[in-house]
Amino acid sequence: SQELEQSPQSLIVQEGKNLTINCTSSKTLYGLYWYKQKYGEGLIFLMMLQKGGEEKSHEKITAKLDEKKQQSSLHITASQPSHAGIYLCGADISGTASKLTFGTGTRLQVTL
Amino acid sequence: SAVISQKPSRDICQRGTSLTIQCQVDSQVTMMFWYRQQPGQSLTLIATANQGSEATYESGFVIDKFPISRPNLTFSTLTVSNMSPEDSSIYLCSVGTSGNSHYEQYFGPGTRLTVT
Image (tube, rainbow over all chains, first blue to last red; front, side, top):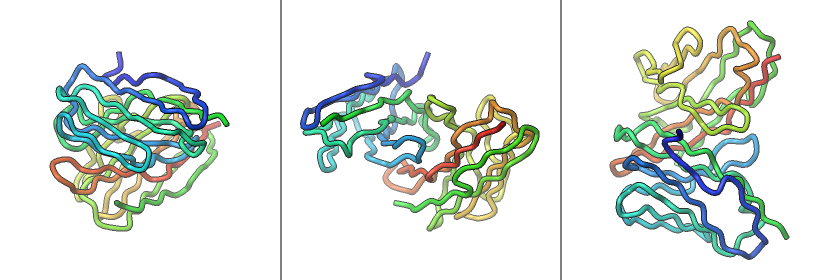
């Protein structure tokens, strides 16, 4: 089984709607990273969370890490076509402050 | 943040040959990593590239198949040796830049490899 589960696997939303993507582990997430990937391209760094209960926002994207540090959510407000892509969560689950384990990704499509 | 470039951006290679991928960073970084993303899959760490010493490989990856060099703090190479179609993937370099207790990790644009 995956050490880092993402849900949903894919999502189609209408422009202007809000959406949430979840990333869950049975292990402690010592550092939790959110990335966006356009098809066939590299990863764009969005945010990193470290502390339980931490929340960060950038433009219309908000990420949270729960108090137990086993679940994170990424929320997009008023989605736009530019938000389309694959969202990946990566986490340090070894506590080494270095290498990351990645989730399976969530493919987001935004329709007009 | 860090600006990372990779060469080549894509290549089509014949089985049995080798390809070396270069990763260049615009600033000195402590940590550099190589990941693989197979078609339709998420990322898997191949190895940590250590400056001045041998790379640290993850389970399932060996030096003979994926030799890595890291001659300084801004450059690394990954070679995919004796390629087979199963090696067709996107290969991504990432770097860790210091910040608090965890590094912010940034990724290069990737190298899309197709083995025929």
